[in-house]
Length: 201
Figure (cartoon, rainbow, N blue to C red):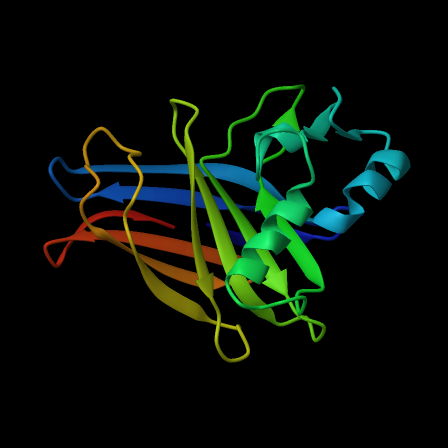
């Protein structure tokens, strides 16, 4: 997914296209227009107080509900993600956690992929956490430490979660990411036996 940016009190609203391409076992392609919201998780309560059209954990035109993300029990999403950073060996070096996700609209929403950008004091992305959700309401977390300045990130992760009825658990994901700035890009390619099976951009 990629797109231009419209600055707002959220941090950013990105408008762009999502492209699915399945190569095997059966070819299929799908493209659709979406918008996603980038929020600093430490600012969610402030946004709830300042914006009339946005609410946290209650109905509104646009809303985020804590139980939709992270621990899925209504507790702090930021604390949950920061704990993952500590477990990965980053200690308390993470000073900001940004979440890129689809908000609820009029109370309804579905997030097949939520991405958390964990930044240090120099605003460099040092870790990524991907929360993947399927249509059965199940979710799984992939994560990766980021080396260098974090401007262009690529890494592989073994597939460990059932998502599509056309692909099993076998295979490896290749993640390609450009963290949020004027634009944001997220590419995921599933390979199986060395061949591309499914891609998402």
